[in-house]
Length: 341
Image (cartoon, rainbow, N blue to C red; front, side, top):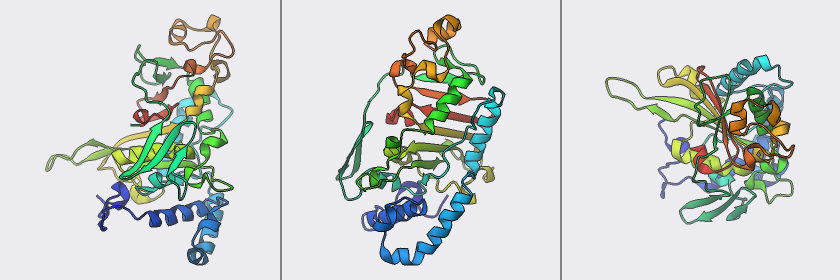
């Protein structure tokens, strides 16, 4: 258990118990600068730049040289995907986003959800407002039904009959599209008012509790989850870290679940937000024509009669790929907060 609760849950010992927004903004600007985002230098304190400018330039160069490097959790996820999809001989490697804005402290996602110096943000998928006690996020849709929502990739554990069975090749294509969203989805709200806004994925490490501690009998155990969201949907990460807490920088050894054998269940999860998947057609994803489909594919709607038929009728869905290996990868074709939870 960390001695400070500021990074995992945002609790401080200050006068009001809240993080300092100015300090968070300086941290955000420096991190944008370290990622090489164009407008970051002009917005960063000159005194800080004078001291840290050379170090950040060196960091950017090293990051470019290590562009293919992944943190331990991401390596476990990519290793699972490559092994599970190996026989498909895909024309691409299933890789997670590389250089992301890592949310290694509670509160960063909240500050990133609004343009700097403003109290409102609106996009195709969400409206966010600053209110007296924090931020209010209104996703585009507030779903209250699960019908047709849960889709599961074939080739792993048995798929219940009330779920939609999806060919592995279709899942692989969905994954490729999920980690390559349209540019407008990548725009970070914090920089959206800048002449050259930052376009980046945001990522978060979670360690949700699975087995509570039983004093004198068993230690507390948690799983690990990596969450990826295009910059414009960073408000979703504000939501999930408010529930499960922030597990810190996934690059640091002290946050590697693989080195925490006494408190890790051995399970790894990955969630990628990708609402743009709703715009794809069944044909371009590789689903068969109705005449070549199996009875279950016809029942589940995993085939097409018109080349313009959209996947799942253009409605939101969650597509999961899981086996008994202990890794589960989920693509969420929506930004409804309930799906993220």
